[in-house]
Length: 198
Image 1 (cartoon, rainbow, N blue to C red):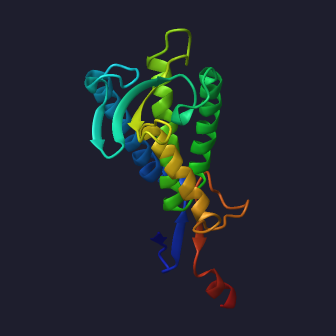
Image 2: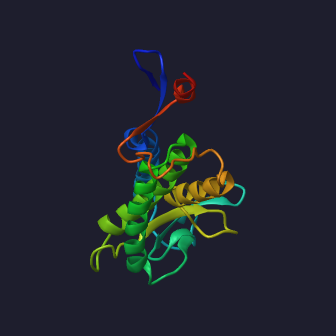
């Protein structure tokens, strides 16, 4: 928000200038948390079933740390489609970044950051763990509730972001007309009606 010399108050609607302040840090936080936890898991456990006491780490109740290598989709689903999925995820991530750049609502920007960060987190696995071609690497999954597919923090970021966007629905997003410069930054003169009356 800014003011002109004659006292008119202008509301800054420039998502391109503001989205990195919200979406970027949220996405980066998810990526860092995902990479650190996966690094720790890989340094402590070997991938595979929990056959011996040292194969997994019990936390509380049915929750345990169980290292598996997932060649498929999120939550250890969809084997043999990892590379195809990775290409789709790259395209979707680019679209989500563009959407974040055009989004005014900080809440939506944060939720998009969760999804983007989670998608990038798992893509990093597919890149650095690739052995049979680009994006062929398996994703490290490790959160095992024993009654639900095994997942990681990147999966959680994507899931929470999608659920949050669904709950928000059409709320919290100011309407921008096609004439408003959502990509280059536009402003609304809050005293426009006063000028017309004068």
